Amino acid sequence: MISMGVATLLQSAASKSGLIFPILGGVTALFGSLSIIAKVESGEMAIRTRFSKVVLGKDGMPRYVGPGWHLRVPGWGLRIADVRDTPIDLGVREIDRVSEDGTLTKQIVQISATWRIAYKGEDGCIEIKRDYGDNIRRALYNTKNLDESVANSCSSATVQVIDVVTYDELRDLKLVYDRVVNICGPSLTRYGVELLEVLITGKSRSEAEVLAQAVRATTLQDTVRTVAIGS
Image (cartoon, rainbow, N blue to C red; front, side):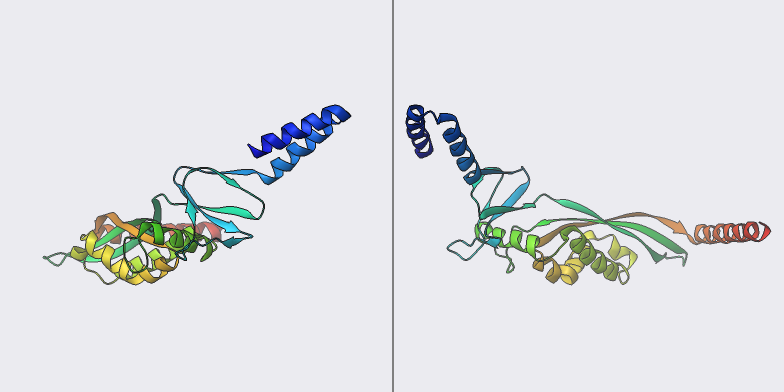
């Protein structure tokens, strides 16, 4: 309303002096530079900044906003973070399984996980309004590449767990998840992230299949070596 009143007043004055278009152009440029609209997409959250510093609320936690259009002025800004569930591929591992009759089986497993910026605070309390903004800040500022940092932490922890568990324990995803979180939990907390699940899928290979693959690999290497020498 104030800007419309100023524009009307200037238009009235300019119409008397013949400067209506230059003045209106200047007013438009002025308000255009002072009023900047920022959009936060669905599935995103943003924390407010002032001169590149995080704006804190009365509770000492970063102020954040949800999806929608938000007005900002020079010096004030928004740092946007994706808060949706994010799947990651943690690679493939091979483990030994010995059956009751003594048969050795190689179990090849594909490991994946899902994480997101945590709703809960460091102490586990469910104070969404207080803790969520701080977790967004951690995700944005405590690492240069959030996806890579989370993947590295989860991958390292998962490998440590899988290398020591038995085959029967491996099928207990709740057990695997708890052990992985116990190892990488401090790193994830630093990034404001929580691990939602760890998935393990794969198939068994008998000792004969493993031996056959080794023979094929050796034969292929010999063939390549022979071709290289012959050429």
